[in-house]
Length: 126
Image 1 (cartoon, rainbow, N blue to C red):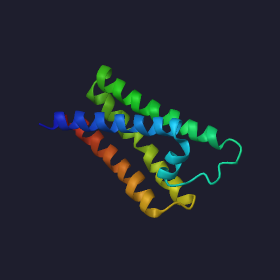
Image 2 (spheres, one colour; image 1 turned 90 degrees about the vertical axis):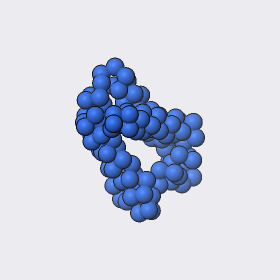
Image 3 (cartoon, rainbow, N blue to C red; image 1 turned 180 degrees about the vertical axis):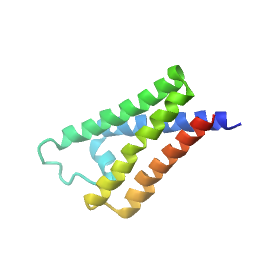
Image 4 (spheres, rainbow, N blue to C red; image 1 turned 180 degrees about the horizontal axis):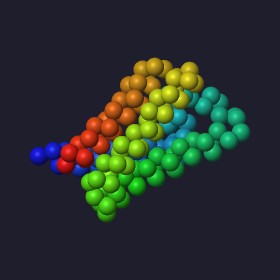
């Protein structure tokens, strides 16, 4: 019974992180604002590069998650989700340490971490 929910949630989460990664690559300033820590006027050296790094990181995470689910199975995907939950937990801390809104830190990043951990639990149970 939980298997379709576990697979469905994992697929949605992986596709969503691919979307976020592509957004950072295609609309970096808009994506940064949504992340919770804006880039100001963007005149600092390397700002665009750091936004691109985030985009590549997130896109890669999502694609690896989809590949694990398709080719390695549910247990591999469960371990991946358990470990990759560190990214949104880290994002929570980054937003808080850099003057971002607590609502964004907890409402987006921490909530995402909880959802990813829930996905891992469902996958382990599937």
